[in-house]
Amino acid sequence: MTQKGQIKVLDYAPNGLRVKIAKVAIKAAYGLFIVVILSLFPDPRSGSGLARADAARLFEVNGIQVDITASSANQARDMAQAEGVKKSFLALLQRLTLNAYHDRLPDMDRRQIIELLQDFEVAEEKASSVRYIAKLNYRYRADAIRDLLDANQIPFAETESKPVVVLPVYQAAGALLLWDDPNPWRAAWQERPSEVGGLVPTILPMGDLADMRTIGAEQAIEGDTQRLEEVAAKYGAGDVVVVHGILRMDSYGGFPELEVYMTRFGFALQEHTVVKSFSANPGEDIESLLARAAIQLTVQIEDNWKQDNLIKFAEPALLPLVVPVSNLNDWIKVRDRLNGVAVVRKSEVTLISRRAVNVTINYIGDAEQLALSLDQADLVLWDEAGNWYMGLRKEAR
Image 1 (tube, one colour):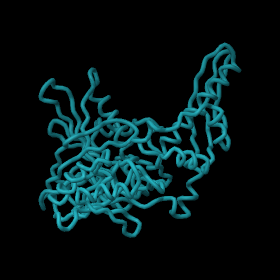
Image 2 (cartoon, rainbow, N blue to C red):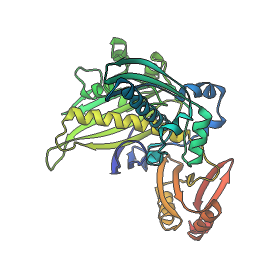
Image 3 (cartoon, rainbow, N blue to C red):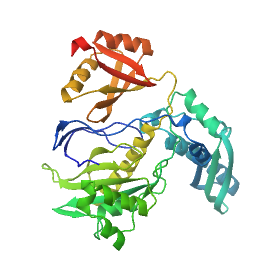
Image 4 (tube, rainbow, N blue to C red):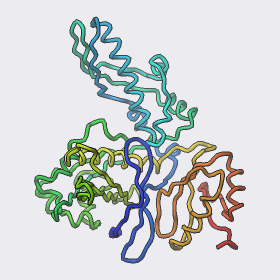
């Protein structure tokens, strides 16, 4: 594990259910290098038997709550079940896909959705002469959902992560808190709605004496390898996510701002840090700000995992690739040339390490057209062992 350096947020796009990532510059003890955010890993469709065994459960959506009042009990029940199936369908698609694609999810009517169902059950229900309240469970046909997403050109993931332990470290007015009570940042993570999350189960430690002896706030944010591994082992988790939240007041209106450094330590993904900034909305108090940040960062944890495990299309409009670099200037040269390629509508840095930059390119046309356009900017695109790489032509370096 590496010690986190000083990080400056250059830009940030907040919210909800699909990707737009902060770009950051990291100054560590060994010098200036670049960003940290998401990483890109193998295609889960070729994954293990365990992933396949989990697939059926991943296509179940349980505990959908409905509460409908109508002119009669039967009408209220019918309306509630129509609402429930649409809510469950949206929840399932959002579970499997990146937030960046949520505005592209297919809008289907009740009859179309029912065709994708394997079965459903009423877990709880109460009814009066005009009102129907229930909790409903739905189970979808996995192949039908996969075919639907493929047909709509929406990348998705269906590999579930091992649980991760979340350590919320809170810094405010000079104090650094982890196990202390109160810790409003920890409370915000404890009180997240149960429906938040999906492919990455998160665990909040109990904060008992054993936890306190194992790791403290400073050791957590410094990435103490041995202590983090002990915490993960205690809770049967694969990785530990340290979310270091720093509360400040802005210099203009005195409104609260939260800057968060979120690092995932462990074996499932490469160690990487996400940097996010949250400003209070008009009338929003600190408690509400922390609650909103905890929910959005949970979504970010999900996104990071999904991005690493996306099932790729044969001819994607989004092309993840790797740019080998030896220093910051190498990447800047490639980036500046890439910005001038007409067929590239957008490019987003997803991970930067010492030797490589991972970039996702949003382009029009086919791969041959993309390669040709890149060549005009002295950029070379090549395939190696199933992965795409890009770099400056030798004579242009």
